[in-house]
Image (cartoon, rainbow, N blue to C red; front, side, top):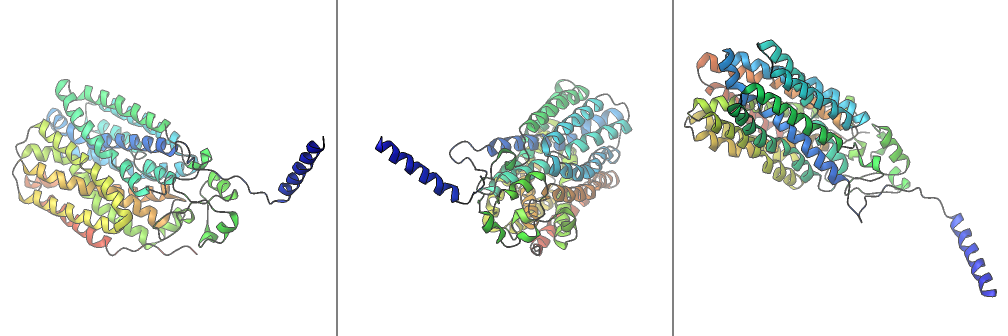
Length: 466
């Protein structure tokens, strides 16, 4: 009995000591001992960008069949892709802003419905204006399939962010390799109307599945980002730049109340203390990044529309031309992964400069050499470096402005560049209709890339928020 009494007194003493200790609220864990849920998020993000590749890269395959059946010129038919891009621009802003507040899942479900309706409607057209309308629907849905997954994966990963961003950004390249040849095969095996139906079902269902895997941020599951550093409330309050923190969502506010903060690596600002969209738009750095997006995207949008007819004009078969388009997209896969991973060491803007200079040289060589084999010699280096440029530019937006309103900020950058670049397919078609060749536009495209390479070396990040 004495021993039991002694143990009871010791237990009471321990309880008294514990009761006097300050209460430290629980903080989300990264689940280091188990499977990190962010890998599921990364898989969903990759699947969504895979669909983006199918949506962006298949119209060029339908170009010749539609032109042959309806007798439309290349300039006239290019207006369809311009409608796609014009609808894409406001959608990128709208979806990014909604997803920053409510998360990406519902946005992407809605996008899958728009894509399905657009493809099914395109299968039933008998004139050009209905096709313009349906491609506008597809463009509106497509605008949710790049910025949102790119933003989401960056919210879940601090460590290895460049690598994961490169992997997710590789989705469009793999999608082009899968869906461009698939579209050509469906058109050859059936006809273009049936091809639209089958592609619409496949792309719409894949997009809905990717959406089901998405979750806005690790805080929604009580986690911190992979590689994130947890700090005590006192330490967090002494961190530089935290006085201007303006959380973008309710979840972030709850995380901050628990003393949870994540620290980025190799960034000029603490990403969790980043810019609101209105603040970013008032900086010279944002418009500089937007200009880089424009200079890179204008030539790219031309090639997604006109590479197949260009390759056919040079003596390649329709199937080989579709394979060239798919190869150009798939070469962006290693480009995005390797250049995205290298950006953590060499710097994002230096990577952008290298990518643009190589793309300029490849485009100029395509303009000067008219042999059939030159198309394939062009798509390998162009696809690698221009494809990697997508991951680099997206990462640069994060490095410059943080993640507080990243979806909306990246949405504005994509919208401005796509809207500006939407004229390039029509301009390229007009050049061909007028001169009988794409030569002048190819020279213009090479100049755009070269200018982007020079300007990227001059652009500096914005000053820290005060």
